[in-house]
Image 1 (cartoon, helix red, strand yellow):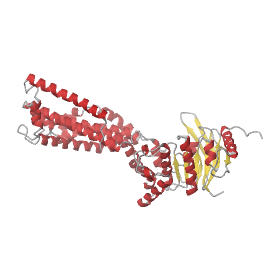
Image 2 (cartoon, chains in turn brown, green; image 1 turned 45 degrees about the horizontal axis):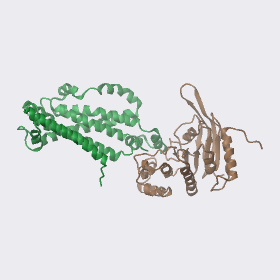
Image 3 (cartoon, rainbow over the protein chains, first blue to last red; image 1 turned 180 degrees about the horizontal axis):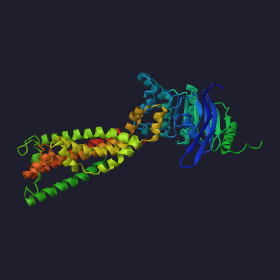
Image 4 (spheres, each protein chain N blue to C red; image 1 turned 60 degrees about the vertical axis):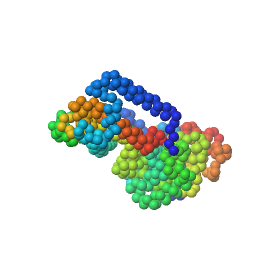
Length: 256
Length: 261
């Protein structure tokens, strides 16, 4: 395994809403190797998104540490997050949205380099002709591609994706899953993705981290050793998919 | 090419027909009453309107008075915006500041600006400063309230994106909060300009003023020249309408993204 780009060590998080403290994460530990796609799965409400937000520096853990990736306190971002709802700025054009992170003081990138990177990314996501469009003029899939480009623009050491395609229709979703694989192939991007779709996880992931119900711990890390492009009808694909589904539901292994 | 839909044309026609009806009834009534001290005829009003550069009643021209009023309203309006937008952003941003300032704002807000006139005169004397004070008061609150609402309506997700990219507090204000709140701020500016325009005319009616549309109306009233008053009112209405149309056009041009994502 390559050197881990990200090490999640003993992350704990308890929410204290009204009265009762509600433990969400009870010591999460795993590594993500450089260039890998790792999917986090688990029953709904088990704290997958919270974990990703902690890694991205948007929330703080009660205990444990994130190693290898600078939290939001440090300068020079190295983790970039993609949300379920593209979260583009509706008043900026596609081009300006992609350049957003680059133009902040934290990046300190000269304007011709900003322009260069934006053009490169527009080509990468095939939206060159929409450079001057506003987000509301794009389809859902196109918006999410812009969101991916915006995150990639700062050349993050890891891309964090929080159920990035769950708001899209099946065909668009397939298209974007392939696009993510293509981008990884090309840029060697390391990706950590939360998903609730076992098929998606098995289709894109090198490894799948399964979280238990809350308070969540890592109940299993499943490798997916299938070559790309993967086929949804491959018996091995189906077997892993079924296994993942069982693990997420917390059911015991099938009798052999 | 500008395309106007048939529906839009028909709506314009409907609106225009009522205006024409209003003018016809006015004219008929004016002929029947036949007394310029009660209801001036349309011709006598048009006579003043169509000679905007000629002295009216031995004083300044209609145009000169209009320019005086416009200068006053624009000065007051920009002062109010310069005060209300930063303050509104601060209140919208900080719950602490809002807790301190909200009660006094809510108490002062419903007071009609004209009610401050005696104070204005006591503090600033008769003249331009008092008028500006009234305009600023009238224009201030709609901008303030809309700015606060705009800032508080910013999507948390947008701010998270900025944080993810390590934006500083000032960058968050400049790149997310201000542009995100701008459509609401614009609405505030539009409402407040209308109020400021009403305030300027009312404030100019005070004794001691020497120019402006409000002054012209009061001056004509003292001389019993109702046709001059009518002409002044037409100019006030047209400028108010024109400003509103400008704001609306700006909204359509710059904030077409609002509410769409």
